[in-house]
Length: 164
Image (cartoon, rainbow, N blue to C red; front, side, top):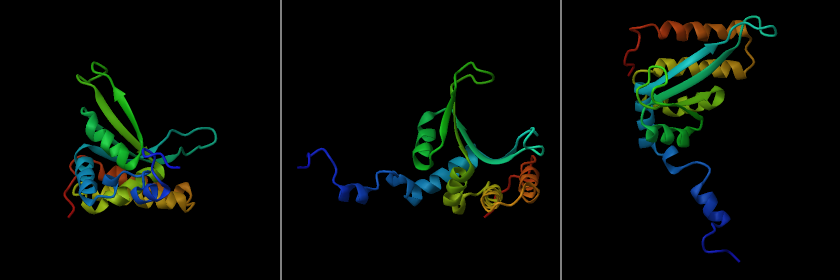
């Protein structure tokens, strides 16, 4: 017997409760791209050399910051990631500040979805996606460093141009 408040398996499959509907809605994906174009950072981190990694490590990261929590929550629900909060009065923040952080394949997957709508950070997304694909294909450090160098060159001041 099914409780009237419980969903049947057919309803669960139909509604795909693991992924909110707006994560599939092109309007919300376009909104996310615009928000990330303005408030996001797409980067490839290089860690400092360590005993087992003498050249350091490279990792894809996307960070999106905002003083309003609602858009950060929406992005987190759409694409996953972790939200950090910096309380008001911490460092240079006069108000609380929220940052959504995504790394690796989760970040690359999100970038693939929003890429068609990016106006400013399209080249950043392309490099980031190619980097993650190279990493997953087992390309050695020497082959992946080119993506790190390309991203650094692109991030120099004055190189953020509309790319449509």
